[in-house]
Image (cartoon, rainbow, N blue to C red; front, side, top):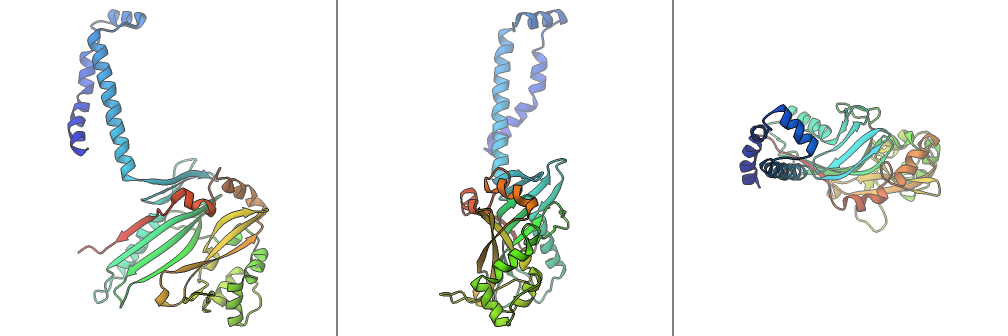
Length: 321
């Protein structure tokens, strides 16, 4: 393919000169040709050849672009064009095309920060981030973020979590993590969460009966181990628990909100479980959930397997030698 393009591109560069040689000799003759719909045989043959050649080269160019970036999902939601590809998860304002969110930019910035804190005695050997776009509802993008770091310790570290951003309020340089309470009522969400058996387990260990806010729940329970029945690993509410969610489906007018619980002990590093609750949406979000549920604008987590299968966006970093 590359050899073919090397041959064809110089030929394409000669097309303007070739077209110039096919011009009819006088203004009167050109006018007659337009009126009669008549062209000389040589002109017809060369024109057809050049059209076919241009189309072929264009197809090759399209193939190169497709190979360079494999799009997993692309759509518009709340005035933003969202593209999930093997290279990035990005959002642009539909009105002017301005980039407002980029998962690659987030991870690049984290890597730069790690490099600026470089320790010669304990060097970072490898850093990897894998993303899946779990749901797109209005201007809220919810992602699964799996991180691996060979940071120079006795063994690599890794963790997996959900994280949500509101692209309407963030920028590429300063993305805006958004709490679930921006889209569902906090009171209803707290009642549903504190009724969940895994959250109740952590509440019992912390000897807490209720919480005024979702942030207070995260603060009180983040040090409490949660042990699901039948599992050897333990998990915990994360410090950023209010933002660690995705929207799964809509059921009888209520939204299924899934929260991630990350590993509690290092032997279980990288593992994660989910807590799911059903709550009504805030009225101003009703339409966004309806269109996402129908996949007309955005989508919900229930459709993730059909959209992406096992595909992920992967960023890998290693220090330059």
